[in-house]
Length: 431
Ligand SMILES: [Zn+2]
Image 1 (tube, protein in one colour):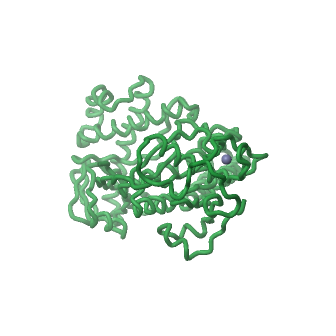
Image 2 (cartoon, rainbow, N blue to C red):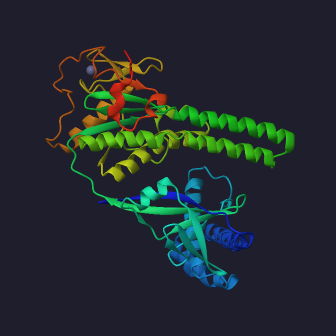
Image 3 (cartoon, helix red, strand yellow):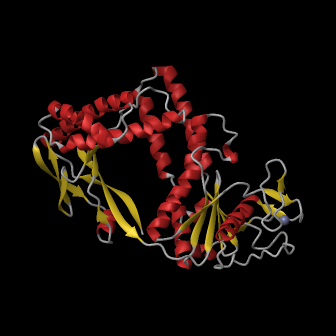
């Protein structure tokens, strides 16, 4: 049994000036507390929420006696999260400053500070008593409300000053139970593709995540250089352009779609998903050529960690079990002969040093992931999907087993599941 958590963002209806001012004041006090406690926590190495609260509760209460006392509680949680992630980034050399910057603030509310009033309105405790807020529910919100999800006690609220609204981050939870797998789908992720092995066929989903990250990085740098030279480092035009860039990048996020296709395919067949066990650090050989630490981290996050995380999330939602295996040498060992496969200068197709047959790198990786999970547990369950391991010569060239099927993202972005695929023209890579 595991728990699935989803955040759903809902806007309030526009507030009156008077009411909105209450929230501006509230945010000011909240931010002030966060800023003070972040400094204190980093300086004194306090990361635990309970410890921070024990040390600073009285002082914060006396600073803002008009605020409901639970704000100190949620501020301490907020600060503890910020400080932990800051220290983690600093350990990895990704944070250059001495203290985390408190830029965007969202107000954390626990179950003493907010409550549902109806399905379309909430109440929030402020320094001016309880305030009722009307929501603007949307389709996705109703889907969660109507389908067995329950609302978690904590929410976050952000102020949309331009439109005088609140933006409310509701958290929904649901428990799901995983089944006993009858087979496996293995997924191998690299910078620009995700290879998926299902029933003896390898599908190569083009993702282009590396290019998205790199494109964003270079565009961002160009904007920065141009405007820094023209108007100095802190100019508003530049910030606005950068903000717009970021939003566009978010929109191009294809991970959820990919994860959905994989998780559905697994659930329909009652299979488990096999993934590489990824380390904490971007050690993947494929991005070692990227010199810039931050950039390498970002590519790693977007293309490896990010895809894996969303696949895990979707799997949990659908009750699909996930198995992890050691990724070492998965693309360098022939799954039939256990001999080394050699790739000549950057080619994605290599030759087995024993059998002499050709392999596509992503196909090898998928089969090795599958093999490792099969050999690892020693159970006598599922078939390997038409793949035989007796070491007999592997047919070359044009068999379904050896040629991955490339699917460009223009095509798969429209899919809901793998089974629509036969209707489309698919490109088979001939090796
Ligand atoms: Zn071989």
